[in-house]
Length: 72
Image (cartoon, rainbow, N blue to C red; front, top):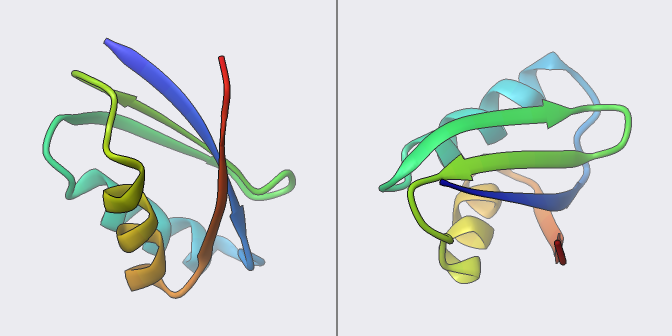
């Protein structure tokens, strides 16, 4: 299992959290998504490391902007 943390810009409410979570959860291999609204950090647990562009597209589909993947 791989855990990555992403910074997402533009989330301000519970609806934002749900929208981002739903889009990322739809990606193949995703096991869990945890969104911290206060920090804008999204922690994603997956079977293997996700393609950054796929995560960025999912976040964009939800209406927000993926800023970076934090190195671990």
